[in-house]
Image (cartoon, rainbow, N blue to C red; front, top):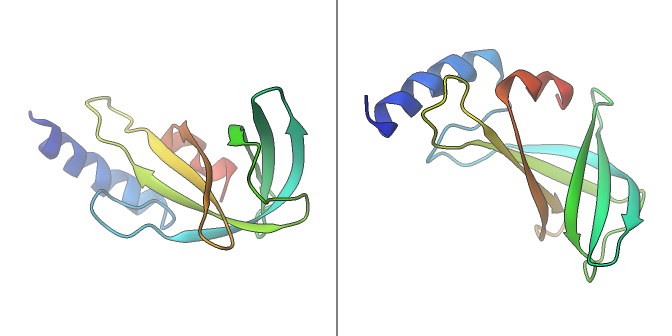
Amino acid sequence: MNHTALASQNVKIIWRESENVTPINQPAKKISCDVLSIAEGKTWNNIVVQRKVSKKRLFFGRAKKDLDINVGDEAYLEIEMMPSELPETPLRVTLYDMNGVKVDWTIIQPSQIDNIR
């Protein structure tokens, strides 16, 4: 089975599980969140955000230090499926500030999607 066929099968399965997951080649949905904490490191900042509705949290560990984002700021997440031959297709979660500037991204498994809904 090729990558496209496998991805299509997984898209159908995951799409039924959550309306917050975006299949490949479709515009991602914006999920609002608040910045809970920012820990400054030598090279990167670590950012924890909390989903507004569910109060679930997600960690981002490689945010650039020169970004204008602060604790309490509103932000949003976009979730997209990644091409994969694995039975559980990984999801790429990207964090953006309210101006649409990309802050960081992380990869999670579809079974973890309930943790950020």
